[in-house]
Image (cartoon, rainbow, N blue to C red; front, side):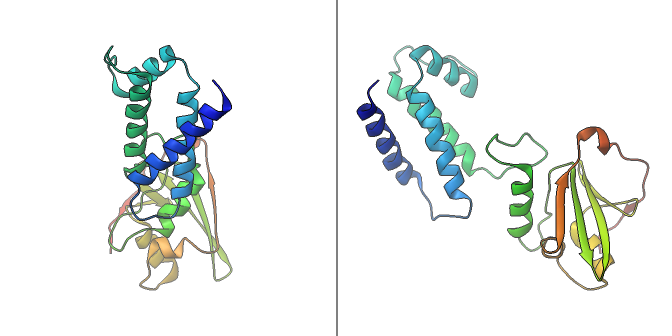
Length: 195
């Protein structure tokens, strides 16, 4: 395949991608770059490989009548649709999203009244009035001070003694890192009701 053909196909995909666009959101450049890389990978693949990718994505063999370009576009349309779905951190994250980046975005873009879900294994260390408070994100709840909480807001209000938002509270002066899943087996703890 010549470089001219590849350049044309990439520019064709960029034009197609523009047709998919809604108003731009933060992080969309990363999604666009991921889609462009996938498109380039597919364009450089053999017909056998794109048929295999189609089967992996859709769970069935593609029609024998589909051309190479049709298969590539159907796969790319699926990738694009998946990039627009909200991500459930309890499920597997796409390879191009780092867990810390996902968590940071989830805290920063949390909407009022919604429960912010971070990836299980996340540890938040928040400094507040000279003390460090540690919160562990488990599967389906948060652990703080050997008790279970449904929301970060309940924890933030307990720490600060003020009526504040948990995602806002843990967006500043917070160190975030991931623990291996083997370190996440919880002990018996009481569940603290939301305020």
